[in-house]
Length: 156
Length: 299
Image (cartoon, rainbow over all chains, first blue to last red; front, side, top):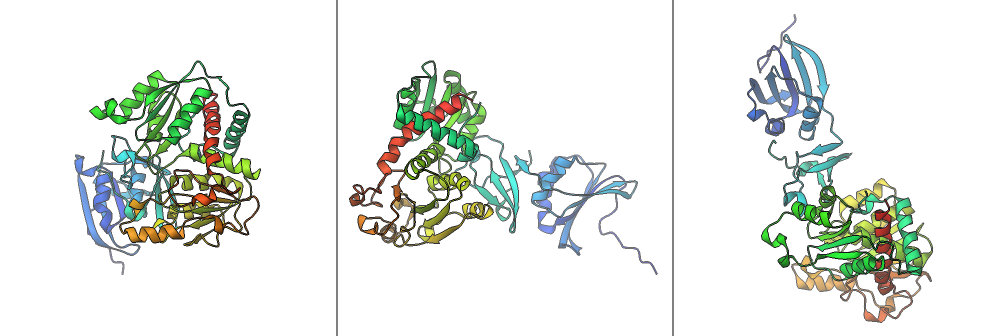
């Protein structure tokens, strides 16, 4: 007999569902996408069970579709995130986030002596992958910041 | 328009072009080819050697120097931003030579200025003209930059000359030995850099025994302020110091380099040895900087 899975967060008709966000990364994703300041209908779920992550968060946003560049910015805090594009209650497209090769104005440089922490300058990093995760190299001071030390700048 | 902010801004071919120009200027130091140019030397923190070396290089090329070297007499003391200062100076000069205490300040300046910028040191980050003069000294004394064994000693954690030199020499198939105390070991990102290019290196805590197969011994100063315990500083300094008695069974082509100022990491009895090259190295700075200015002006 077929059992229908019960959704813990209610379905949306049109919009975007961002799935597979690490449970602890939910507020970072909200911050990065600037969702707190948007006049949109949204549902957030956190500490939900996940076969992939153990626990996860999920965001459902009604009538909102993101540009690829916008959404790839969340890859730093949610590298496994999947975007489900919903139309008439059906998933019409699934997109995985991709780590951008350059990141602008999103992360603070960890080096306190970096000029970006002293003048009004938009930060800029190039990204690379190592066995320990993503590493960000500051365009200005050339110091590297590891993923575990990332500090997200409040949304611009 | 090209600037020199980081040693990584120059590829191998560009570095060799600068070194060729330096050799030309060493043979003929007075070449007033830029008598129609004004070069601003703006030093946001004190400097003796680098500033004098640049001003000499500019003068020998026939250009005029404007600039400042102390903040109290400038608008910066009134709270002017770096951005505004650079905008203003680049209206006056054909090139800016800049030293600043903050990392990344020179890169930022190069993005704002309407003329080429030469980084004369930005905090603990880069000092690419020192690197090119180090390379010129190595090239001149060894006859090549390829396949050399380089031992670097002292403050390998904060020493920006060490970081830039190892990046620059990575184009020439080197082998490195790093000699420092655990507190001042080479940062992980530079180990990562060398690993990614398959460049062999080893790390040591005592200088004794690490000189004999070196072509270049690159000494650096250990600053006392890096240590909370003055006793610990003394112990480390003793393990990292060079005296003439240690220079036995070395390779005949060995040269000792030091970016200066020296404190006592090289005993004065080394100064008279044929391996000592640090004072000639400083002299090479003028020719190398003439080469850099010429190369960038012609871009």
